[in-house]
Length: 383
Image (cartoon, rainbow, N blue to C red; front, side, top):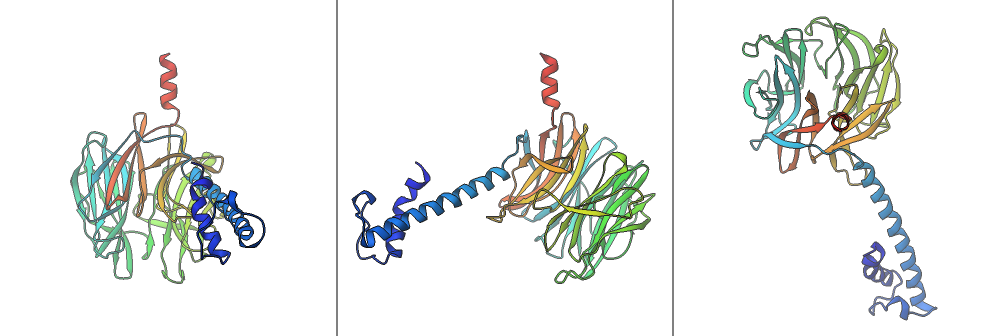
């Protein structure tokens, strides 16, 4: 049934009330005559139907934009759920095994988080717990870095208002080092990236949560992932947050920055060597949060929380980033408190870790998502 016909009785009742003649039931439109309240009701019905059509069209267009993703995940599995708030995933491959880390706590902002590290020897089909990290009242936002024969785990450890990033490393997956504080207090070491033999990160400081005073994002570098130095300031507008770094052709650096307040919320900063002069522009999507970026088989994928501007409902989208723009690729089943995805390449798929509360509890999931073009090329070669 067309939308206008479905809503017509309700629209007629509302038009009758607005016309001031609520003492009698509304007559069918084809029984009404010109003049008096019937004419006013007919006019109001027409206006309300036009408004209903415009709003419905806008909502449909918004939904189409959000769901315009051509690929579906091949499989989705819950890998951890114990009734607690399990969130903020990190995923990497080290010595042939997959390593998945996340924070577990009573709630999103509860000051009681620990970091859980899982290990898989069968490309993510089964997982066993390897380590738990408890260095502070709240351990959160784990980040992995594989550097040579060493796997480094970064822990943003919070005691009350004090934040210190610690690094723990292992060379065999069994024995771990003593934790070592890295870089400066109050800075979150976010998504470290290996490039041309050095490690870089777009780190940020949370500053004052209410006013934004003291917030900034910096570009930092390291030889060993433990001792870091500042190269430049990316932004210091007072709303800088998660800043994901990516290196493209010609050593071109791009930082995808989430702003906590103001517009645009999703901002892109770019620089060429020596990475001291950053230019910014708005992204062609409206929302970054808990985002990461990876290149597999020559295609660059961007993973981020999405936000429906009308309903304020969250989701998780994988975009393809090319020519400076995001194009929807695959939407994963997620909602509520969600996202913070990471990915590794597994055969013709990428394995994506993320968290979501769409099933009630806040759980950790992995999804198998086909890589762009691999299946098509494989089918074509078999013909």
